[in-house]
Image 1: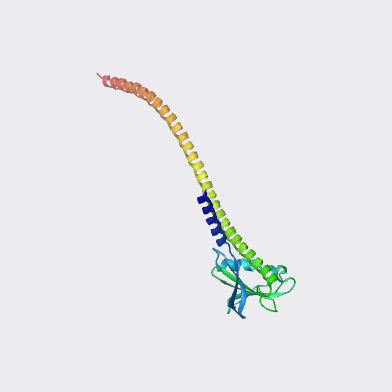
Image 2: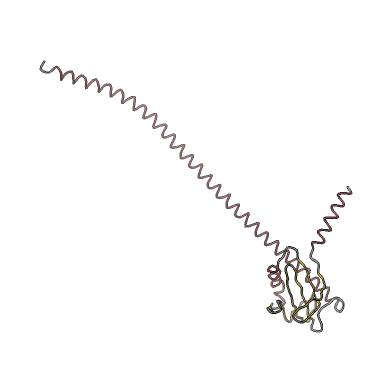
Length: 217
């Protein structure tokens, strides 16, 4: 029992560690070293993260790209759960399976020390984003598995169709065999009849030959 409890505890620890957690970092971005919220999403890549971020933030403004700084940004975004009705600029950078978001509140970049309430909202915003990435990844996996199932169902349908065709071939072959068997029986009867006719005709030929040989003698 003790061993089971230890195993369960170990599994729970692994599960907890595998959950993406929001971290507060001071990192270099286009406007210098600023405070940002980072989150690492297991088994995700930059393309997937960028794709989901664009969809996730679509309601808050147009997402633009700063190619030199390798950043994406949204100007004058209003997110009630973070900064109420006040507009802010959001900058994001992605690398491997991590994303960092910088929230420019116009009077300073968001951080937990100076903006605890806003930071809590932003942290929850980023945490929910990580869940959406995982959902999207799972939806993609589901679609992939569904495609595999669809192909297998098609393969099964083709096999069933082939099987039906093979049975039809067998039925047609059996019908031909039965017909051939009937033809053999009829043929053998005809052979017997023809043998009798040949014997009778042979006698007739011999009789005419004998008649021929007697003429003039």
